[in-house]
Image (cartoon, rainbow, N blue to C red):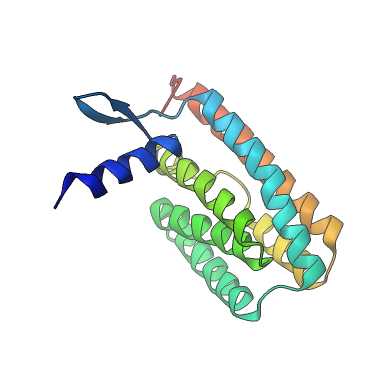
Amino acid sequence: MSRTPVREALIRLEADGLVGLIPRHGARVLPVSQKDLCEVFQMLAVLEGLAAETAARLGANEEIVLEMHIVLDRADDALLQKDIQSWAKYDDRFHRLLAECGGNVRLGEEIACLLDQVYRSNKVLLLMNNAPAASADDHRQLLKAILAGEREEAGEVARRHRLRGLETMKHLLQSCGLSQV
């Protein structure tokens, strides 16, 4: 493989805040600090709130809604089996579907970029805690508000869910004595 596609991929990962390029030496994976988590979760609270409001206002894509229901059921099963790694995967998928459900492609892309940063820290911190970051009931309440066309409620549930998740992640970092993941 030529160096050009690898270099382009690394430049994109650097732009996403996932790696740091070291001239003539390569790249390194960047840690996620508590400040990074705060910024990302705050942005997600706003952007996912907008995505939820948009989906409630315009009506969510039926195929996406069906997949959201399936993902929620699988996430519940993973929690019953105390499989936090699988739960984290389904939680990530739910939020990616939420980003798509309003039909705003650019909004979905921005949310997806932020979710990439959250997923890495989720995998570490949630496994250390062996519990989810936020209530699974929030996801069902959010989907219910979207389907009912309750725009304000959907946005508020999405924002509240992310901000509660942020508080959990901050607590986990502190309880583990970590400043970054």
